[in-house]
Figure 1 (cartoon, rainbow, N blue to C red):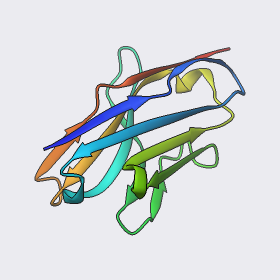
Figure 2 (cartoon, rainbow, N blue to C red; figure 1 turned 90 degrees about the horizontal axis):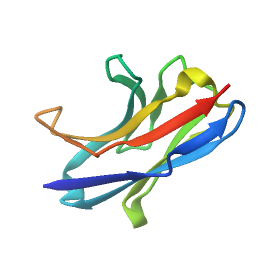
Figure 3 (cartoon, helix red, strand yellow; figure 1 turned 60 degrees about the horizontal axis):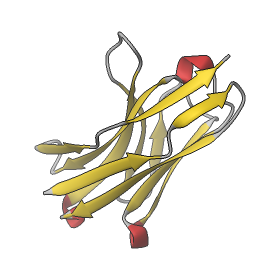
Figure 4 (cartoon, rainbow, N blue to C red; figure 1 turned 30 degrees about the vertical axis):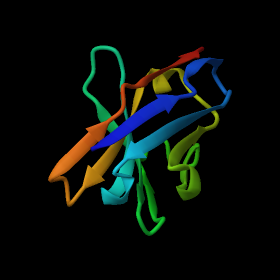
Length: 117
């Protein structure tokens, strides 16, 4: 089992920055890669960014150039640095851990990000 706990959300003005954290515990060695997703009010959850075990990263077009995903293996923590935030970035952000090609997934409880315009 893996437990994921997000933190770092909050209220920020447009153009501002926030850094989200996702602390992992338990059988973290089983995780193949990790993602950030977000869910805006009344909308479906959408993928934001991915970091593979190799360190390779991928981003949704909507955040490319503004968000950076990273991890600290020693701390078993993943981060999402969000710069130049826009009101449309307002959502609950979730971290996600994938095991064995999506045979199992783990989710955090989410952290609210609100960007005022």
